[in-house]
Image (cartoon, rainbow over all chains, first blue to last red; front, side, top):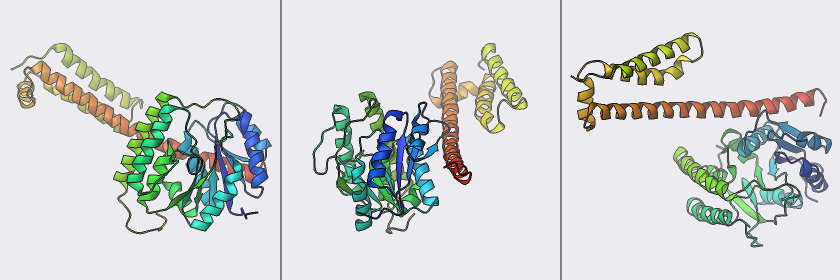
Length: 243
Length: 116
């Protein structure tokens, strides 16, 4: 059993009343000592009440901030409270909490600032929506050029970060679609990341909000964000300064 | 000398007066009125019976004073839109930061009260 002291679990959720309770209980089963923080992004259902009843703390936002804004708040909270690691997984039940100990272990063993749970590292799961597959292939190609290494699952929302990354992301974090831009933010500071394999499960309840039009908008938005991040921060010549 | 349609002069003058009244009544902050005032004053200036618009038209390569005016109007509108784009972006960032701090403060308060 891996020691999970100093680890916080962050679960972004918006109108996930049907699934959030089950996700929290699953996380409890594998990481009973880690505090769970649900990020309630302006839900209009019972997400907050159910999450609290299941034993999680809830950061409840006054209005719909978007994924990046929620996750950054969790990183700020964790950094201020002195946590060493944060593992973030979705509130819809698609991410298997059984991988949390392996993610923390990977962060500790490699010293990387960020670990991504990848659906494509070992098992080549294919996204069901064709435009989404196009997006992943495109971003793999772009990130391979920018980062100098392959990222098999650049859009994964199942990630773990260490305290160096918490310090950075508390101040600088993409507010809309954070996954890919966050990698570029890290790379510009010469921080490191790695991937471990995972497998996605079907949503427990509800339907994905991802549509082909949204995927195209997402791709344009992220491409711009990547470009802006490169313009803002020149490649950092020194390693691991926490800036 | 090009004689400008009186209606355009009146519209520009009304816009200038409206902006000043809005500032006075605190419906508009001074810093956000600059773009509107600058655009309206420019159109007002160009509409005065001077050679200014014709000269400007030649400089811009416009084949008539009316075309030069369209150029100026489009430029003014783009400038105002860009200005408000930057203002909205800053406000959005500020609102996000406030909402984040509020959520964290609320959670800390609940913990202190022993509700969590």
